[in-house]
Length: 119
Ligand code: HEC
Image (cartoon, rainbow, N blue to C red; front, side, top):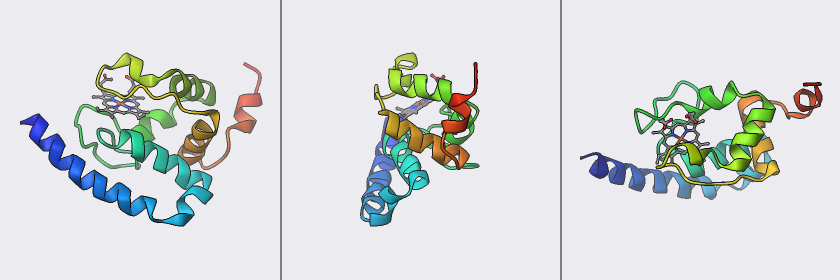
């Protein structure tokens, strides 16, 4: 049953992603790029936008969860592969540029000021 529901979700998401990739302005804006990265890789299971329910009920809203991570943690988690902690998740190692975009999306500013702060 769960499998069938996820397949239907897939079709819907594939259509949404196709539409998104046809918008040329998305890559130009760090904030939108960060959102697009999360949507492309994670939105099969996780809500990526604030306040939205996740497609997979057990998967937390990423805007909420990742938004609580300080830069250092976000960087470590996403570059080392957050998926190593749960088996269904993709093992993706994001580049620093990708992680900066994601941070920008979550906080509406670049991580520089925070990451320079003494530990
Ligand atoms: C196949 C479904 C699936 C995909 C795709 C997925 N996740 Fe998850 N994720 C889950 C589930 C289910 C949970 C909650 C249960 C758990 O923590 O194991 C979760 C939990 C999390 C958590 C909570 C904290 C933690 O580590 O336990 C984070 C952060 C997270 N995912 C990040 C991501 C990111 C970033 C992506 C995209 C690169 C992603 N997930 C893609 C299913 C998925």
